[in-house]
Length: 278
Image 1 (cartoon, rainbow, N blue to C red):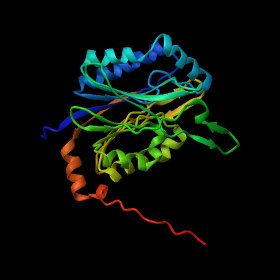
Image 2: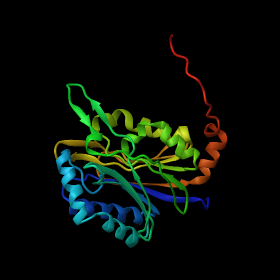
Image 3: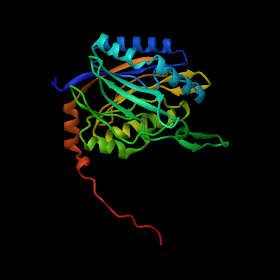
Image 4: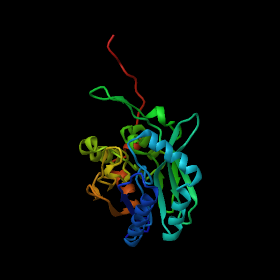
């Protein structure tokens, strides 16, 4: 077995609007992952609070100022001696908007890196429903590559998965593992989730850690679940169902080296011009 390997866990949760209950779910998930030998544990987007109402998310972000979740999560990392990826917390930002922020915590609870979700979902859906994530959340502007004891980890959140160039730049900068914590909707998840994750793995010859939320959330929101660990060749190594669960897989960095040697596409990108109709 390679000395460049470790066990990673993706925790699948069904968070709601009870912050204490959500943190207890997280605690059980981290404990279960550690019992399965995980050294790196990844939590989903909005792991500590999820509600369909923007006002409820705003109120929770304001509550974070008085009773922040991050110190509690840092304590969990220390207690269980694991590196902990906090998929995201919705926190107060600038100009009245929130930020959707991911944290990477070391096994002693220190903040190693943080990342603000770059891509915002703004769309007019069938039937005229308008979604403007950018009205409530300020987008990040910096891609983040973090160092762990085993591998370089590229950070992202949910909707970012639809933008391949983000992961390309992370991989070309040295990322061997790509984290994609999400709260993917049930409707699009059944069609797109696996395909997008496998594409990002194959394109970049990288492992994918994709923790996810699942089930019914307050306000009528439904998320897909199916947290996954995917190998650099696109093989699904572990997959959750549609209920809370912890899935683990061994991450062997020699596989990244081997896949990239066989298919060295990271070094084959070329600049080109685009010809358009006159």
